[in-house]
Image (spheres, rainbow, N blue to C red):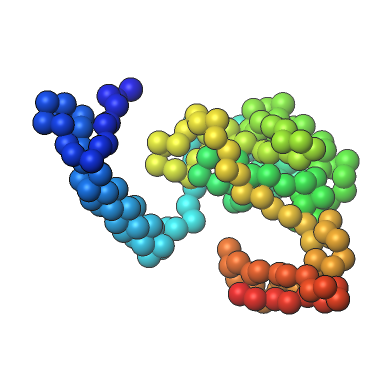
Length: 192
């Protein structure tokens, strides 16, 4: 681990790890600018939605596709939805609706994926977080592998929500946000 940085009103010339508040602010401003520039480049890239795949696991994936096609489809859905830490949180109802399968088939598919090392199932209260094996698929350049931090993408099924929240999302594009507010009279006010 690196040495501690000391920030104070004035720089201590006898301590190489000492900076003034104004120097530190400049450093942080530069870091923020670099981070903003990086995000802009990622947004402009034609590969903004990409996933890496380890070809060493082709045999296992072919086996999965042939022997358990529903589990294979579920794995692709989870990979598509996972965040930069290979995690996604969704209910079994979401998996059922997206894949047009029953609860038993969904449960069996999760078990097949888990038992064969494609995913781990973590708990957050009563919700499941599906962590995709980062030796098979990953979305980062490799620097986010093996972290235990899960700012997981959460996928919700409209059918699981209170009917006051059930609105049509047909006009929404991929990853577009919409703010939905419930008025006192129970009607819905939608804002982009």
